[in-house]
Length: 106
Image (cartoon, rainbow, N blue to C red; front, top):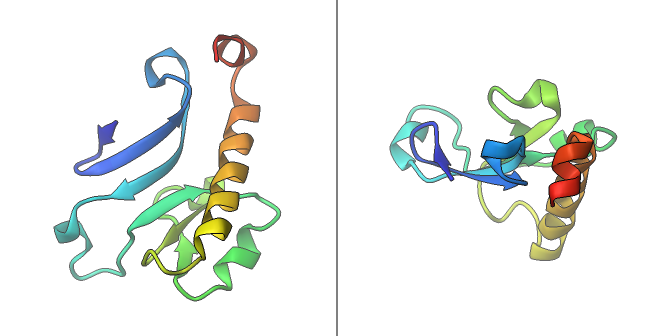
C-alpha cells in the first residue's frame, strides 16, 4: 500500500486485519532533498542491527530505528541475494510477532 506521502509499504498479512509492515520503499525523491537519502527501509534482525549499521550506506531507519529497522541510502549496498536474505529474516521476525488470530488467517 502507499502511505505517508509516497512510500510503498510491504505488509505481513492484511493491514486492515492486524497485519504489520516489514519494509518500505521511498518513492518520493523530493522528500530526500537536503537530507541523507533513504531509498529503502526494513525490519532487521535485532541481533544484527548494530552490525548492519557498520556497513557504508546503512543507517538507522527514520522513526523506526527503536524497533530495529535499518535504512539504505542506495540500492547497491547489498548484493541481491544478501538483501533477499535480510528481507526474509525481517518478514519472519514480523510474522512471529503477529497475534495468533492473525497468523492463523495467513
